[in-house]
Amino acid sequence: MELGNASYNKLYDREEKHYENAAENIDLNNRNNSLTLVVDAVEPGTTVLDVGCSFGYIGEWLIKNRNCSVYGIDIDETALKEVKEKGFYEDAYNINLDEVKDYHISDKEIPHEELNRLISSKVKFDYIICADVIEHFQYPTEALNLLGALLKHEGKIVVSIPNISNMDIILNLIEERFNYSDKGILDNTHAKFYTEKSFFEWIYTSNSFFKGFKLDVEKIGCTTHRTELAENLKNRFPYLYDFIYTANPSLETFQNIFLLKRIDKDDSAAGLNSRLESYKKMLISEFNGKNTGKVSKKVSSEAPLEFKLISPSRHLKSISFLFGTHNKVTKGKIDITLYNQKEKQVVAKKTISSINVNDNEFYEVDLGSLYLSQENLYFKIETDLNEQEGFSLYLNEEGIPYTKITYYGEEFHIRKAAEDFSILNSMEMQLREKYNLGKYYREKHKAFRNIEEDYKKKLKSGENMISAEEYNSLKKENLELRKMLQVFIMDLIK
Picture 1 (cartoon, helix red, strand yellow):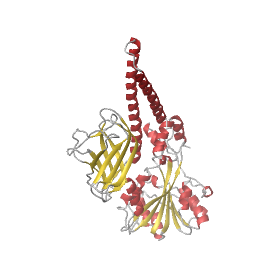
Picture 2: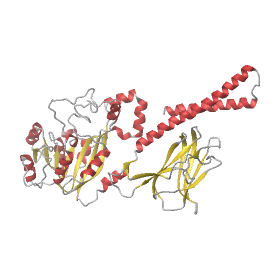
Picture 3: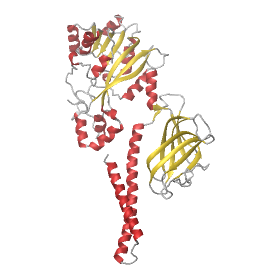
Picture 4: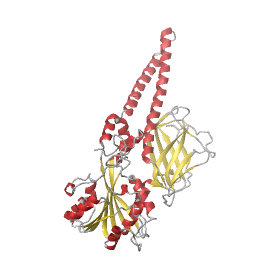
């Protein structure tokens, strides 16, 4: 079954579609099944509205195993007829939530018979289940506005929803493929697509629209699945697949499961806010002056560099240094220490075990979320590189290293917050390390070839033969190069 991209685009499909399953297929021991995670979120003895109830398999399970009272909504008349004939559900309603997007339960007149019937029952729900439903709505925000009004205070909506950032979708987009299918992530009846992050952000912005309530959100689980097409791509492009997957293993997430809780308008959506602030930051970047083009003295094992930190904020994210490597690639270890000069107290220390940078290239040192409670702070930069291999830092007008300081703003607001792109940054740094490492070894190899050519010329002429000391130095250089190339090759194939 094609649960990601189809072999060809099946967007045009006029066949009648039914989503069938059976209550006996729900197994609480199978934690990689979205229906298991959905029903397990529902407390026993509660009142439940099953949106998109289909043939009633979720409600049947909840009635038999959790003693719930269940109502249903669907637009499939065939399925609704069977649900009513089975008699498990208290009632079932034929309501297309996209068609009633302009109505609310507080409206005096609603020209929709089935919705009126539901509202007039005056039932308030502990749980509303939207299992693989929301992605079908043209107007999901309006649908949640109506459904949220049917919840009791602190009632919950359980949502399972396909993950559009699945590896199948990512890799096929690179090839410009976005082929709708009969079922799965690219079901041709899906109107909207979501990732974990985009779902949280959608609810955050929708809270200003909801009438008389807002929703807090937590992710309660996910399912993983590698589609058949993704498996074929992994076998065909194993290095590419593993490189992307290692950077973000959640790309094999097939469905995300969320729990939305109704709260008052004035209450804090703590779970939602916390999740957003975990990856969207009020980040502000500032340069400490202008780059003069001048550089500091060389930083080496014999000559560390110290300078005062001048920061526009006490809450630092990172500091980026502009390297001057004297037209070569620098490779080595660097220790960066932030300390109080007066008390000689270390505030933060970062060790970069293997750094590869080009001339006139920024290198960012991530400080995490460092809050500066002290003043009179200085940076000390040390390295294991000798004087010949050492590097400099470009300076600003005041004669201190030219840096870009990134810090956190005080108050979170989604329209002003920015992502730090931590995954892409990690991938970029890995690729940059490999690229610069290759350039470094190519320079070393070129230097060795020059020495070797010189040796051959002397050998051929029979004049001025190199000394034993020069020969041993050449041999040592050759052995070192071989070791470097072996390390480089092993690093490339990791």
